[in-house]
Image (tube, rainbow, N blue to C red; front, side, top):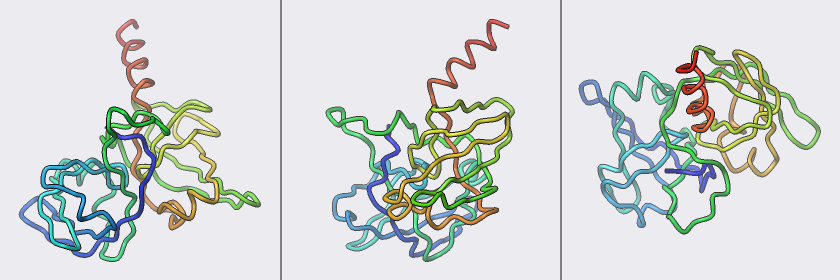
Length: 195
């Protein structure tokens, strides 16, 4: 379980194909605190640490994960948003995030709002919804929806988040990992069953 509050950005150091799996080796400041089998959110994707060195760690993405996320677009040198799982006595500063990406969205527009930034993202509506002032997780960052329609939404980014996450690296056309609010998904499922 995560909160969508990014601890820092890791750097992709190596990518290795292994049949249908992909191994990603990354570096970050807290490698010495990681353990094998530990879950860490990478751009909102919960991945398990499978190997460690003094300066790097490796996670593995299976085909299912690669198909539902933007991990196939990762390249050596790319910055990745990192968050370790929450402890039960921690504050929940963001919102409840599972690290299970629902789908990939597309950045349609980025506007400079004279001190902040607004990002417009489209997605396939099918079973997912956003609501104004509701929660959304974009590349592992807990954010509040500003505008919402049937197949897109906008988010406002404060300067700190712009500078300390990879949201500041985004360009129009980029793919982002989306995890919709878990509470909204349960409510939607209940409403569908009533219909």
